[in-house]
Image (cartoon, rainbow, N blue to C red; front, side, top):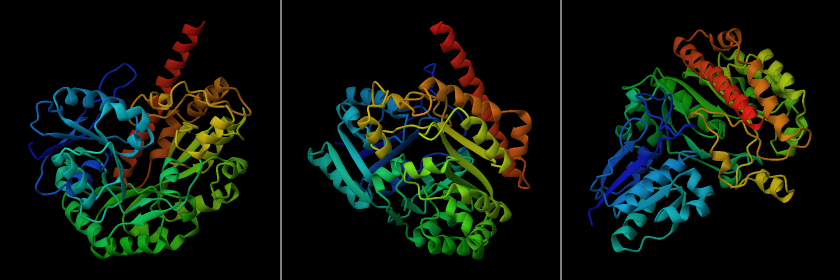
Length: 447
């Protein structure tokens, strides 16, 4: 057999069945650079980001590696079927195959769980060579090597992804990361991180730290920022973190000096009872002060909120929109609660016979585009009907989709950040319009 592996990041089909293609994305997965760097030098490598390029189904690679983080898994299955017809060994990896393995196992030759490093990839590919490929491989979290960014064309990505840590010190009931890492995280070696940043700073000014929680370890984060300042990098960047960073003005100011301009924060709800019910260890009452501290540092906030939790009512859409407007949230990231299989909230709702999905994969089939919200209610809420949750969610989007709201949220002193926010808030409005159209069409069909 030829010692060559073809790594594929699938694209995604929209509601009309069209495969999404383009020349540039705002952000992209780091899976291919990570995997490509872990594969032994004795193996030849070929790469494909399907969003940009056509898949080479005539490749002479003997092994096909497909990475999936979510809804692109359905396109991944199409790709796998075509390659298996051609006698290739197909291996799936990534977050989604981990939680959908029963659904996926008949569609491929092997599923890789976790973050395989150099040793794990050597084991897997040695097994391929010897004809002893296992149906599953359970790997530890291994990012103890430098990623080769030459596998990723940074000119095609507005924000080039960078990773400092894997996992999260929190373990909330609704969170897929919490269900996998169970409140644990692992920090990367700083030598590897700065070797990557040294490479990137000569090629782009825009990066995105894609950790689940960049504030996992305060001392580590401060060391990264101090070194970025010392090296005089000119990056403009954002990161995802928890709201408790709003208690740490010193770290926030250091992050701002290092180039951080926006933080993506999971606030989730404005009802304390909701936070308590999903075991998120923060206080809604403290949000105001923490938001003010973040804003005073010169950093904008993109906030994640879930609609339809058990404490939500018919008044929640009005209350949540007022909160977002009052606190100058630059980019609201809104979804109806999604009880993802594998999470504690899914298990609880299933035990209470409140899950409405016919198929555990139904929640993956509701996306308009890569940045799409989840607008369907797949469970029985406590204080509303599923239809009231969907109507209330649409009303929440409406309240935040006006032109004046978009401009107020987007404008900042940083031109690249303003451009990014204008684009993302415009997509927010566009998505609302599409969801409204779909909702109206569904009601007409029902009538």
